[in-house]
Image (cartoon, rainbow, N blue to C red; front, side, top):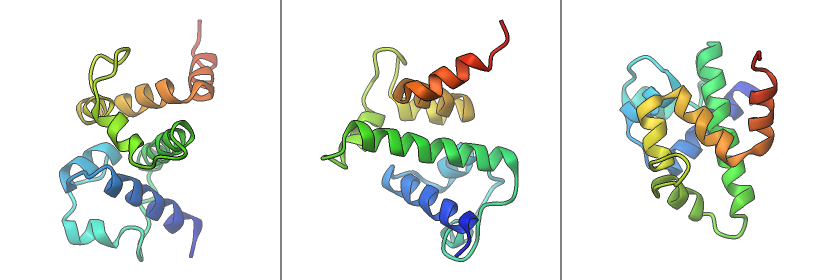
Length: 127
């Protein structure tokens, strides 16, 4: 199996655990409108399109999942719970922010969870 299919499979599994619908998955990843059957093939026999925007968003999803696993290593259900609870600094539930702002929400949530990402983000901004 290729790395592209592995990454797609991992991303789709994260989104399945987050219990998202087809439209929500398409919005988060920036995919064109996709039928459920096509979405189900992603990761099984097909990889995401070779589009840098889709690839970047999928990487953010995987990094959020990894950061949640790091935060809650002994309780795999806490990550999903954390995403759905209102967050003081974000002003709303992290998943609601992602579903409202798409890639911008992914970046904000990842920056909240992963300080190294936040440092990278701040070090690449021009003063």
